[in-house]
Image (tube, rainbow, N blue to C red; front, top):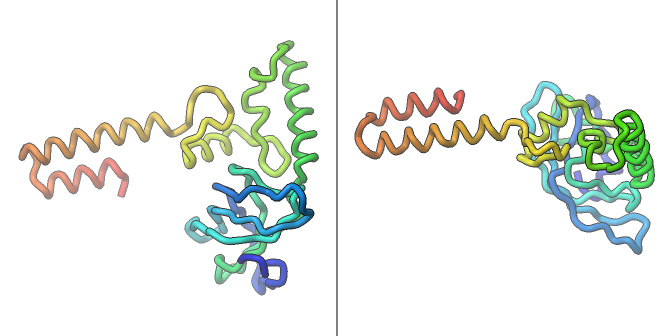
Length: 191
């Protein structure tokens, strides 16, 4: 990956995706520039993995955190991948699609404020995100992407953390043996 990404050939291609976690700031005075990105790459048949690298990006396609980028990876070595920039919508295209979506939502509901659009403003590669995709990414990032006041998966996470804290207190007080503590901790964590 990296600046030479455009010259990389993938011998055994399989499609995947890369979720943008963070990016460097775009240089608004340039056409193309080096973009530092933290990504989580997902390729079928492999565990997701983090990537921190530099990529050569057209400024009008500069990704924002939360964007899902299409990739092609080597089926035998998923760390060898190329981002499919031709399939990524430009800022103008994403903005136009979001504006159309919010207007359609407002016209359907008869509301006058865009805040009621909620999930309609969550886009993945220029298309509306499904509720399942929003829930999955909210659970993974801990962010309220659709501004509905609820972060999917957060309640489960908070309850698990509370249970682990109570379990640790019981172990510290001597009410649980180390073996009992470890077994219960594994059960709570699902490992």
